[in-house]
Length: 142
Image (cartoon, rainbow, N blue to C red; front, side, top):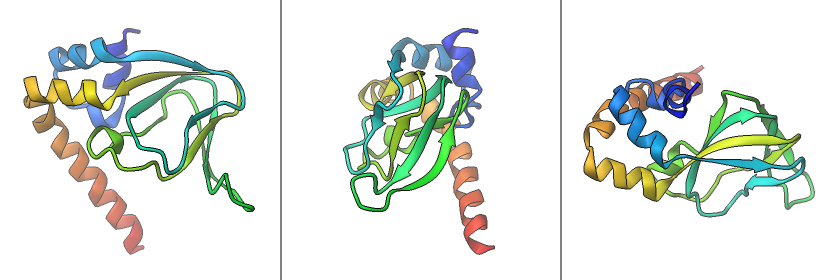
């Protein structure tokens, strides 16, 4: 499966045209992490989106404190850092590889460069982002 096919499986990119997926795929890079490696650290400036290709990782809150909490686990097909593509805010949690892990990484500056040259990417992503926000709000209401 090609990188554009892999990106098409991510909800955030699911509405993009084949042409736009190919443009994003051109900027994506593969990164490997050993067991125990910190992939992203809570509080650091967010600079990239990560898509799990293989391996497993755990999402942790307060890793530097006395009582870190495991918020969840990630496996192939899962992704994180999607909001980093848009806002660049500090990371809200740490992600640590719990085994050998490969991620497809799309850096914010490359993504923004594509948006500048092809604003249709943003227009295709807006309904997906809106849906995700509505789903999050619905979960808070229950």
